[in-house]
Length: 319
Ligand code: NDP
Image (tube, rainbow, N blue to C red; front, side):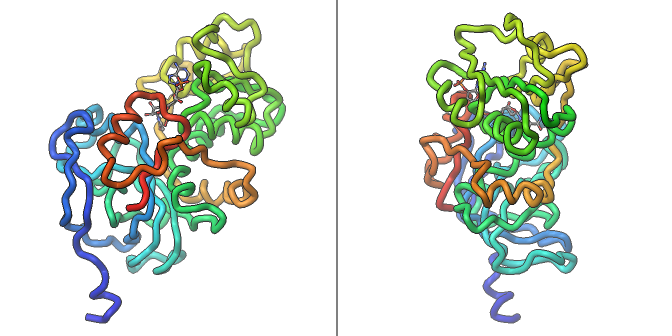
């Protein structure tokens, strides 16, 4: 065995759960066996991982019909360093700093080994090279939420000169929807909702109109929008705020036609496409004040995310 091969780990420290439930089911395993690398995969030394609501929904057993694997290491988003590559990996090499959402399909074919682990594994096509100006914490905050924001705007055929209402503008997905609508697409007007304390934040992100949902109902607003992007799971109300001929997008199952519902397909190519916006600092991940959360505090971090009060992204670092 070469020196390089012998330094490739066979086991990893990882958080896992072997029964469904609240974040208290999480346990730390110092010696989780790493699966063999497939030809199109890379092994990553995880530096930072961000949390997504899908993690606690999956942990609660919401997707158990499609996701029977137990025990499971949670975590979709990673930023880290490539330590080994499969035979069919052509672009990435050992030492590359990468980031991405390691689950290609949002709720099916999920990996048993997630990113809340010292090492994780992902297909090359799900990853992108980390822009050097982003820290690992910032990079880990981006993949799933940004790709969801982008895929929803694309599915709604959002384009320059259109108006948008972002329902839930301060969350992981919403804060990227606002920024992409403004800087990538050239929205004519961006409205977004939050509770009272986050209205100024919505304006800083690029909203022209910050709506306090504790005081105003979106369906009662006389102005209607070309696109309404619902990140909170109220498509019935979102549909009432859409202009005739406009579109509503919702990302919480089961959706409500004619609102467009989709489940994210993770693609490193979206991160590559949007790279100039991160390099220039025009689009930025918003980090929750609790970020970075130490690896040892994962249970508390998921419990906090589960309150649905997080601002932007919660990132675990260092791992
Ligand atoms: P977050 O946990 O980051 O969202 C938290 C934010 O939501 C808070 O800042 C909160 O602001 C805001 N919020 C909560 N309730 C409301 C409300 N009634 N009106 C306005 N804002 C509200 O979640 P994410 O953004 O990461 O994800 C949002 C949802 O989308 C989750 O359910 C997630 O599972 C789903 N999702 C689906 C995907 C798909 O592929 N279909 C992909 C990604 C996410 P405040 O405190 O001001 O209320």
